[in-house]
Length: 509
Image (tube, rainbow, N blue to C red; front, side, top):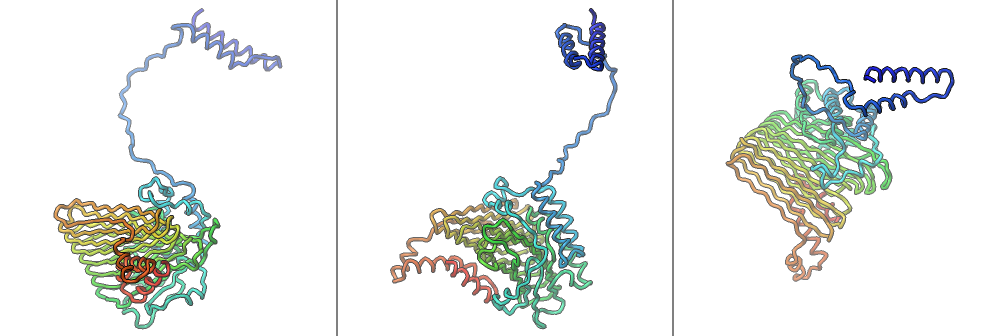
């Protein structure tokens, strides 16, 4: 029997089985019958039909794209982005018509499509656990909750100040002689028309932020602007006080989140001081503050930035500070952070011209089951740049953790750079933890750079010195711990802020 006859028999058999099924008779499955016959065919050698050879045809090479396809964020991030957008739509107070904010929101929304929530597997968050935020019921704050009692508890600094509650400017206090002519301090919506275009061209030009930078861009309800014209020197510092008006209870799943955003532009030759103070309404308040500060320091301008963070011990505080310095400019940061179950400060400074000075002086103190984290990055791209960084931290709890990741990059054309970095840590409990990663990357060859790190407990010789003079051990320890942080605290330019930080640290001890 040849091959054609076998296939003909198979076809006839399938037809007969189909006719039997139509007449209601029990029939075999045609597919089974076909499978049986095909199985027999496969056992017969050299009976399989051979494909006819196709004629040769010249074809063009196939182009293969190696460009990576856009990856999508996890569903949680997408859901959070949608809730932020919905909260802004429902808020009558948000500056939805602000063109810079619209541009920031569109850019942030696009970025959030490709950024997943960070985990301990990601290098920037290797020692920083954000899972308690991830698994909370995050609720964006859509309206500010004004409480007159907040003002009653504030320390008077006699400075032009603004109270920012849940990202909204709620109370602006400026005396007639506090600010020189031409200086603007307030919401972007109140910016004079002649300054709107000038300020707008610098807003939102930073593209190296992480997920939390984009979350702020997506959820910022307003934009606070500080503008200093060329050649203007502002004697009084501007004081920004941040509060969380809506909080959850400790142990609850509800986690209100606010996204304050501030932009500072100091034109050529201008000088100003800025004080940022983050205060928790109560010690058990459960909330998340996610602020962003952008600073543009133009040629020969100076900015002194004071930052005091004392949030609730149950709160989350993740802050971004981005600074762009032009030629011959100066930027100085003094920071004291003690609050938050999680407190993280990302500082990114770019020197965009020669003869530029950057100073970062920071002090973190963990006295509870908390993590305080400083991630800094200074990029020097031009000749004769100078950077100074001193970071000090104290961990006084067995479940406390301090994290320092300091990156200083001296690029090829940053010749004659002078860069120094030093971190010192005190561990006062047996299981207290500190993770430090000083990183000095030098590509230029004519530089003077140094960095160092030290981790220790209090020295026995120092304690003995106090005890030999009749001072008890507890007092001696408190004195040494206070003096360890005072090196940073004393650098606050404003006396009231300096005293306030000193007293706060003493109370924690």
